Image 1 (cartoon, helix red, strand yellow):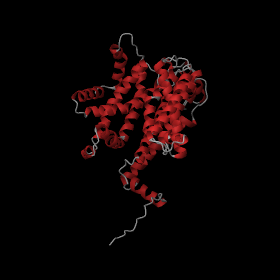
Image 2 (spheres, one colour):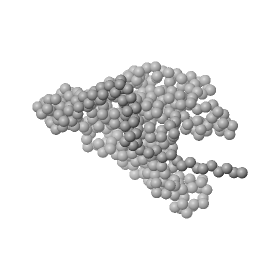
Image 3 (tube, rainbow, N blue to C red):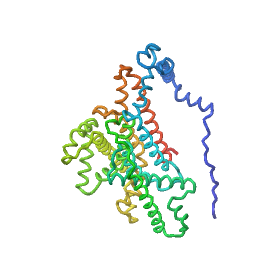
Image 4 (spheres, helix red, strand yellow):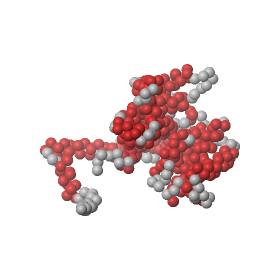
Length: 442
């Protein structure tokens, strides 16, 4: 006899009513005499601080002036935001030539176009898109930002980056419109819908080869003026250093974490030594050592500029910290997951790539994003070794003759700028946790 159980209707969470909100306030803020007094005291402090900040930064502030002395003449008690506004381009672009700023803006637009498919639900092959972003976009952006003559290798990599940008964009458009991949669309377009997957890939590779040759020939004569790295600065330089560090930290950290767990003695010892060495010294020490010691290990006549040395140091330092984060995530996976994978015949790399690492990375999202935020903030230390990042530019405002002594306003603006970026990263990590169902709340 079959017993049919009634299907329970899904629970719908209703918005908080007025009575529910009052109960929550009473329970959490006024449930005792001590909590009531503490609540009113904290509200008073918030009111005083907020009123003072509002008066200083908004109502009494000066927004238009030519000098700091003119700001004082208008309002002696308010903030002088005119100095920050006058240095706006320097804060964001450093000393980059103003007539060449389109190159930085174009590089940012290309990055946004490249990464948009990662946020579209109907687009497939997102891992491949992410890999091309990490390993090919830096060549296109690097040439746009630095310019100069291109060698054969740089011409090849720039062409590959442009082709991947076009392919990813077409793939995203096809995915949004039809839900199919670019390969399926092209095979259907050529009337080869029933062709084997191998033949379809051959058609796609042939088309890409033709596009690659055309773009390679076109960009051989395409050159832009060379901009020395000493002209780079501001938020642009901060995002370049932190962006490369973030892009390289996770894959390098995964390799180091796997190396530390390896059964091969040489690999395990090397990975452990690397991790413990870089985790045992402050980041500012690593930066100073990079700018002084790297040239000693380079071949005769091989010279690295200071910016490249700093980027290498940042990548190595954060790879060590990311390795420990990844290792902690791997230890949360039960041993039976490994045994089950081996039982069905999966090898080591298949087990890690298909079963273990996807689960571990979902558990590590908060820690990974926390490391990324720390990396972004740590890049301000490069101002100590002579690079004019966003903090260096903000500090330079107070040394400019018209704005001599203007310290508070630039630093407050810089704090607000970092808060917006870090808060956006934090909210996106929370969005990923919810989307990937990593939260333990039902």
